[in-house]
Image (cartoon, rainbow, N blue to C red; front, side):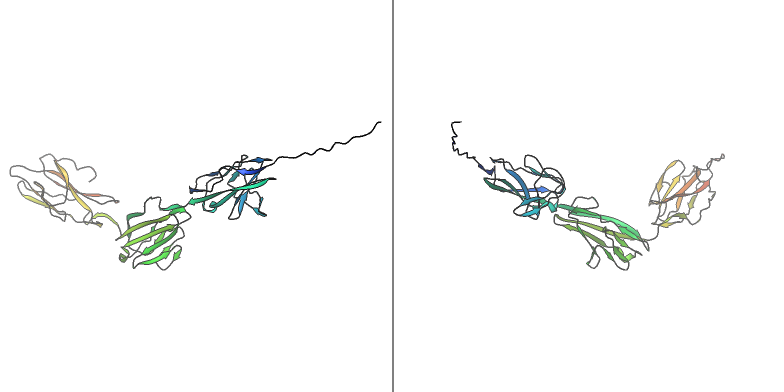
Length: 334
């Protein structure tokens, strides 16, 4: 063995500090419910490690969904479940809402240094709508029967949830929920009026507000009396014999609420309403029908009176007088 020899060598490692591309601050406004994505691409050697943080106290620093922790600046931060950190460093948030608004910081680190990039996210609120109607102001007319209970819907939707206020007569403001004597405003915005009075016939205004705007529903309430189906004061059929050439008057009296529409159905003539003037068959506003037959001719057959009203049944009343020696049958239904 002759001996040993030693050679001293120095080895150095070249490092490139972490650097984020396009690092200028960005501001993004996202409508409520839409997705948000922020890119963060960094270069350097060794390959930088990327992490995200939200300055309001939440962050994400590992791939995958769910709540994850990241150490950034000595603080452990959390991110909501809808956040996803992609392998390339991009951050996406599904269905962004108001809690997601804030400043997102992307940080790239390696032994050579660190770099950051800032995204400012703003989530636009969803303006309120009332009963599914889109518009700042909607006017509707509703009716209520006297002494009944009336419910008027004001179903407000929006994000954040709108605040509902009813403005009742005398400029009184009622905030949901409210429970008074005859009037109540339920949590869902429905206005309830118990024992409706004629004095309740007025305008009721529902106002829904949130950060996105305001929606107004104007309800014009009409109070009616109890509905009654049309009835004839004398419901029995009558048979009247008239002489040729003489006038004959057929009287009737109809009751109902609202007042029924009265019409006559005549032989060999179309039906017509009880209103002033009709050739050959004049009648008064109250319903009587007078038949004046031309001389030498004999009107004959059956006349039927009908009283009708919306949302109710109908009735008829019949009269017969000679048409010819042979009688004709009664009209159907009389």
